[in-house]
Length: 203
Length: 336
Image (cartoon, rainbow over all chains, first blue to last red; front, side, top):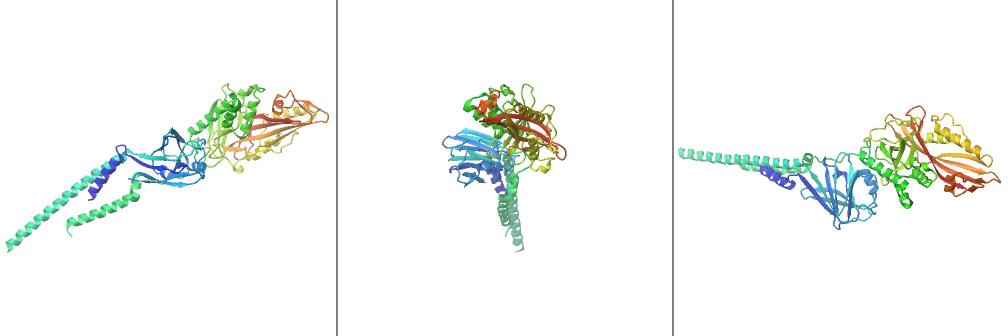
């Protein structure tokens, strides 16, 4: 049972991750305001995080990352949707809404280590090593940002191979276990037959 | 219970138990999930690449402010400069027609920039120190760029031409950043005390500064000699006084690698003329005054305001500060 479970889990995980070992999490923010990915999510793995933000209306999207204290200072009491959790294997993100103030044009500040902008969507690859950092999604000016889908992607090729290894080990364990069970049943039947013959001879 | 049933029961327990453990800490550890790192106040809050982009942006805008006209020039200058730096740059551009050496001015003409220091830690204000060298081989110019808060970009707040034979000691590595020295006791003299003493020493009539915290320099001597000449030239028509005040919030001390500090400061100099009764002074010869005040003749009083950007090297423990760079710009004039 353990071997079968491990084999099934490993195979399913390998299929889910794909050969690139990618795991995606998405959520759509509907309230007006910026979207924020805090360091508890952004810097939780020693891997680059690819962030993609897409607007349904095709408007401008601006993505940037800065030291958390600076990003928090410029957003102050602005309305934001904060990514507060990720769910695997569901592939979803939790969003926590806070603040009510309008989002100003924060793109002119000199705090942003990296940034990206685009029409309709934008992507940003946030590396590790300078955390804690916060990623922010806005329209790039003071224009309100409403329905936006944000996707976080982590990729590690070794995750795919580890899942494959787990599947193979599980399959091997299951095969040995089945063989062992089969042998046990055969031995039990043989012993039962011997006992039966001896009792007939005595009578 | 047979052996087979026992094995199955143990397997179920193992699967359930293993899944529970995997769902908690073991899976997180296996995947490398960890807490977010704590903020490190011992490194620069921006990368060298970021800092260099900021320098390029500001110095490019400074150049545009010099070459553009009208509102575009004002926008460019406001992008490049702040505070007294902006005040001086605007005045320099305004006076460009009568001060043909504008291209050499440290206030508007940086050419090649060299980043000397970036801030350290996450506090504000944050400052950067840069050096530019005009293409003509003129003396290097030191610039102070300041950002008062997270939302406000870095802008040039002070620029001063280095004096002959002066040098700037190295700062900590750019990746590490250089902290501001806010505790005056960490230096032989605090930045504000130094600037106040230096300002007092350039007043006219001259005031004696006992035990000055700065070494004598040719720049101050020239300024004092100039004041005496002006007083002598107008003596028959007006009395002349010169007052120097340190501009509030203009003094920044940036720590260097050996513990010394490079101190930037701005002094506002006011030259006042009290015209004697029955006298009228023709000011046409002073084109800057005429342009700034609109007065070609004064009968009662006149004043000219100049901002002076000074940079000192201040030792860590004992000794006197040394003037490293200085520049000045007439910014205002009035008369009646």
